[in-house]
Every structure is written in structure tokens, then in C-alpha cells.
Length: 297
Length: 64
Image 1 (spheres, one colour):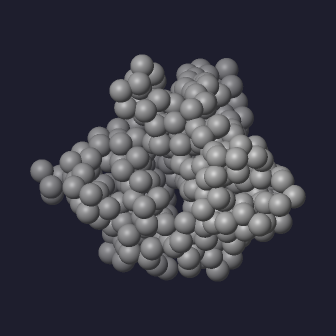
Image 2: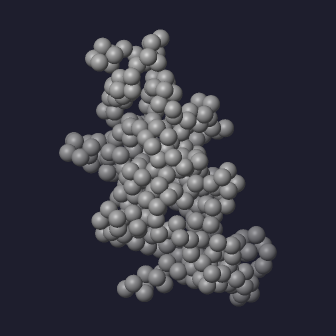
Image 3: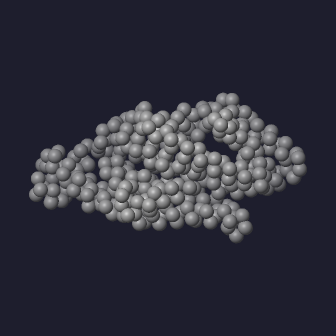
């Protein structure tokens, strides 16, 4: 077995390997990438939020035109989630590690433009990983859709005040005995509304709408599309190698925020996003043998 | 306390706190209507059906 583990999966005889041998190779490949600190994600998370915060004085002081601020803010909001996602999985630093504080800082700070609470995102995202594609227990299951237009339609409906999908996160927190984190949701949303209401009634409603409210809502569609819907479509299987797929995005890997290789993330959640393409290339023969849906990638 | 939170996060609060001034300021910024009480009345007329639908039916856009 050790000899097999030392070989690469591009060996001509790889399809003669047993399932156990493939598992060893899979873990061996993953191990090479797991302990890499994603400094790019650290800079991305903190820099993105600082850039977004700087838009407010720049626009309000007429240094930056509002239309340009809106475009930048939309990118900021769309880019806000993934650095926090790295932190949710403790990829920057695990518990007890010297850089743990940085992991938590990136998690909290990067989500500010998205106005989402980090600890809730972490708790509910773990539920998604544990129960991917489970209609009841997967908090993101409601993003499943027949096609892109159906996804968009459902995404709009999910944002309505009476939507039942709003109950998925509190329910997941309750199931995992973390209902105390509802306070985080409350604090973040009160702050978000206070800013919107305060700006609106001091004559800056359009600025608030174009720097936060609209960018955030556009971004939610984009993030859910690439992080939830596309990688798990059609959302019917729950096994390790079939609950997530690889796919070729029309917007490429950067335009889809690296989600073409999301299957790697679900197999090994501690591997940094930036390493997914390399891991995928190395692991592809194994994934094919395991019956994964790799699309055209 | 629970009642206060419900009111704060209600569609009506969002309509009054944000959408109403947003629509009014948009009408002014686009020179659709001049400043004055009329713009606030028209903004309220525009926002009210959406707010009522959201509050009573649970959807800003009727469908749900």
C-alpha cells in the first residue's frame, strides 16, 4: 500500500488499483495541500471590505461618481463571502494555532459587505456539509432548481418576507444546539437596517441603495448560483462522491469564483480554494473511477 | 422585546424606513417631480401597494 501511495495517479496502471488503494492515494494528494495558509484569501477578505468601506466617504464627498461606486460595491459584495468561507473551515488557522485570531478576523470582517454573521455562517455551513442535498437537513437545499431561470425565480421568492426558506438557518441552529447565535443575526441585521434607515432619512437613500442594498441583493443571487446551485445540481444525490459535481462555467474559473472545482472542497473542506484546480488535476483519475460527475471539466 | 423586534424587521418598517424615502429621493433626483409634500405623497402611493402585499401576503411582488 505504501508503494501505491508513493506513486502518482497518472500511472498507466491506476485503473487496476482497488478502492482502498484509491482512497490512500486520494488522501495522500489532499494532504499535500491542506496545511497551506491562504494568504491571498486573507488579503482578499480584509482588502475587499476596506475598499467597500472607502466607497462611502468617496461617494458622499463626490470624489467618486455614484454609478462607479455601485459597480465596485457590487463586486465587493459578490467577493465578500469566499474569504469568510475559508475561515468557516478554519483553513487560515485551526483552533489553538497561533494565527487563529486572523482566521476569525477574516471570517468576521470579510462578511461585512454581505451583512451576514460569521458564526452563523460557519454553523449553518457545517450543516450543509454534513447533510448535502438532504431536503430537510441541508440549509441550502432550497437553492435546487431545474435550470438557471428557475433558480433565479426561486432566489427572488426566497427573499420575500413570508418565504419558508428563511426558517432553514434558525432550524439548523436549533438542531445543533447553537440557537444562541440568533443574537448574532439580530445584531448584524439591526446594524444593517440602522444604516439603511439612517442614510435614507438623512437624504442619502439612493447612496445607501446603490452602495449596499442593491449590491448585496444582486450578490446573493450570484453567490447562491455559483456556490450552492451549480456545484450541487441536480441536488438529488447525497453520497460522498455524488453530492457535488465539477462543471465548466461560461464565466471561467475566476468568473465562477473557483466553483468549477467545488467537488474538491466537499471531499476535503480544509484545502484552500486557490489549490482546488491543482488538486483536481491530480485527483481526476480517482474521481472518474469513483463515479463523480465531472461534466466537461 | 419580541414585539419590538418583529416590528423592526417587518415589511412595513422597511417600507417606511427605507423604500419610501428612496422612492421620494429618486423621483426628485430624476426630476420626475419637484421637491415638496407632493413628492412624498406620490412616493407613498408607489410604495404602499408593495408594502401592503409584503406585510399581508408575505411577498413584495405578490407571487410567493
